[in-house]
Image 1: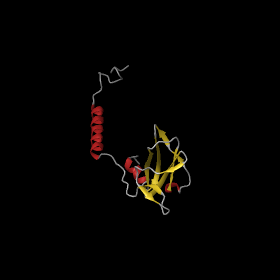
Image 2: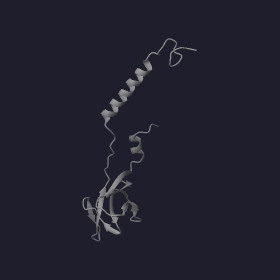
Image 3: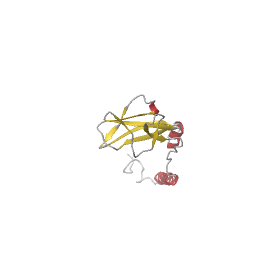
Image 4: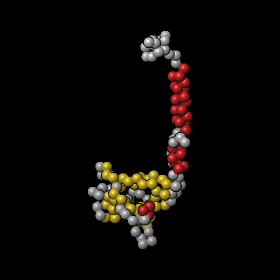
Length: 139
């Protein structure tokens, strides 16, 4: 079985790799949400003043929140939803996510270029008279 993007997508079709991002400062930032049953605070990775975390979400709708320096926060620049008690959480819907499967024209051209290159190399005549090695002479 050839390993391709299509095979990888089909093999794990019910999960979606998702990047969570916090861009509002802080020294330590964690994330939690419905994707882990609000059961633990996951440390996010810092890059400059921004924090990221990648998680394979199950398809569907998810609420989440950030814990920034021990304070529960939502990102104001990301979609939000209020829970039944009126608390604001961030929200993401990956129900209908479609993975990028590449540019079909690019893939076709790349395959054609590879095929024509391999045919050219295979059809090239051996150098030298004897064909016995790099110099062409047999010992």
